[in-house]
Length: 317
Image (cartoon, rainbow, N blue to C red; front, side, top):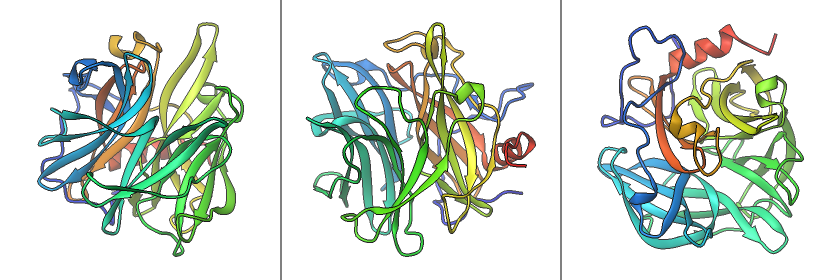
């Protein structure tokens, strides 16, 4: 059996059992979406957001595209990780935040907007009220910056997808390291699109989950069809000591647009994972994803189910 290690014990993890007769390894919460534009005044859409355990409940950082269509990031709190109260105060401008705890601080990475393109911003906090902004992790343009939840070989590790000022070119995931969150280097290729469902580009999703076999990585892959982009969720297992090495990788998606809230919205046909709560005791995983660039939805799996699916459909022979 696969096991989560160095993780949290989350007794109040949101959860629903797999529907009877359902064959796939990831299943949706039956009351999706859990967050809509109605959760915050003046929001046009709320999606692609991140969640972590905090205190006796949960805290999140949320992408809010406002009625001005400005990209803003705000915080929110919840007792059950399903029902949320969002704060109107903007902590940063940009989009697609990820969030993890490293030692005694919480680290936010997000797509930061500059006059010269998108970079990966990094900031840290102990209380989600006061933030310390660190050096930008990439320059000049990148997206999907995802930190690992602990140092590896005594260095911070960041997955990233370099890009240009447009929306599509450069579709591969890379790894970079830093001893101090100031100087970044040791760039390593991790993986590129291989199968049709992800052929346009791929990007890291939630904070990687440490399991007994390495790092469980959920990611998104993009198909370009005659009707535009389709975003789906895939998974891989990376080496624990050298995360640039892919040990196993599913050849097919785990979750793709199917429900109305995933196929209809500001950007149709999008499942975009950004956060995962993983309970070390039970192996249960709750995945938060942006749906159609409009709402936040929730899905479930277990470490056993997803690792088995990856190995049963492994690209790495």
